[in-house]
Image (cartoon, rainbow, N blue to C red; front, side, top):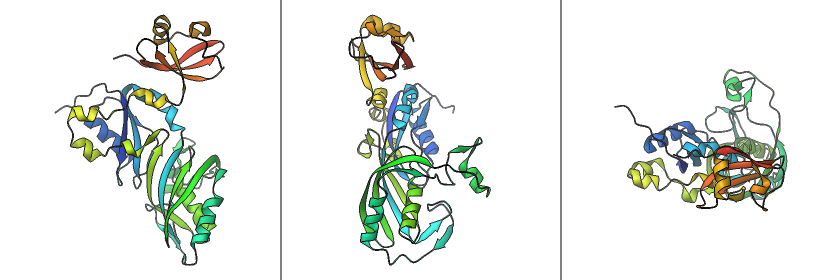
Length: 304
């Protein structure tokens, strides 16, 4: 029987299970909602679990405004063992004694990794080099240059330590690889380490408190599932807000730029981004940027 797809707009907070790729989780959720268009925000490796925000329909246009947000993870490390990938999916490279590592050393190592720093992405990453993903080169045994990138680790909190297992929570900036952080912590402790489990707890404004598993969604009726969708504008809640009078809202929705005198006194900073709403009914219209004395549409909501 041919599947029927439909327009579905909104954001679903999914609790991705261990053992499933982010894309596989997205496609399963799409089928449950019969959504004709969808995407995910921030890939989780198959061995990782936790918060995977999904965008359906018009929401896919605005995912970029959350992708750059900070994230919070709970990580479990195995001290004394390094792997080819820095996680449990790789082969063991080396095993070293870790019994000498005590709580004081662990706390100091975590404290030392706070703040802005440079991090070299792992060999098995989805980043591209000359059109191919890093992991493709790694699987072929080819070494490529991997440039360090600026990241920031805002917080590292020790949750549990029972040698050789270490559990901590990390609040980090966009682009931070927890696998690499695990390896670097192991090196700092003098015994090596790899990530054995990873769970994402928060991504920007979204947290696991509002997430649903695929199993729970499958057990619900269509109407119950639809109630779990967050409105598209939740993706732009961090942006400045401007409301347009009916005539200006109509012109904006048609893709026309607006002179600032037609917008109001609350806007005017050059290059500033705004979430734009209709004044009459608080309807989300899209995102705009101030440039050259005008409010210029960047992304627009297409009415159904």
